Length: 270
Image 1: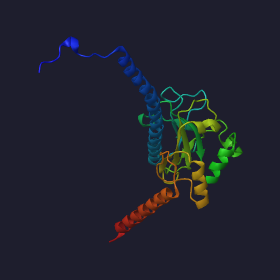
Image 2: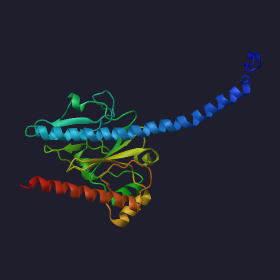
Image 3: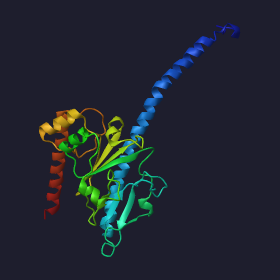
């Protein structure tokens, strides 16, 4: 069968083309903002993972050098080695006898780099192990109250982001680093409206976990069951945790601990 003449073939009308273009623009307007938000959320989680690895590296160097290190973020009008004011600073107490508490900036390649990505920055550092009671009290306060002893000890340091000291054996205090891409001039009590990830560091073991802020119903569940505020595993899934979820996590920890102890028993057998 012979093909139809070219002049008889149906072409797209201007109206049809306009409808297709308009539909594509509508889909783009709906998808692109969500895509950008997802990229920003990924940047926070990736930054937290890189900060976790960075802290592990600092602990290793402290143990290797036999010197105290500290991890802190730039104060007001202070720059980091990259020329910005967001990357963590690594300092070392080089002469603890002649110059105690005198910390010098480390500019070696391992200590300088882009740990926090994009617009991510550390809004707050909380020293000490997180507890359900402390989390609930913090959320009820409108403004952060600075502890007198902490203020006296760090009178020249930003009280909202105190340094984390790493001892010569690699140990430190527990610490929680709050990472977010919220505007830099945001107040702490307004961070609830922005995505953020908490990097929780176990000072004794050096283990660290990424944890999104708990929801109120989760805090109530943890408080009712007497469970700690640290899951000891990464949690960035926005889905609300149920009691079964937490029990499964705790069972995994118990099983992992049993495997670890059994492995140690095998190592000491003659």
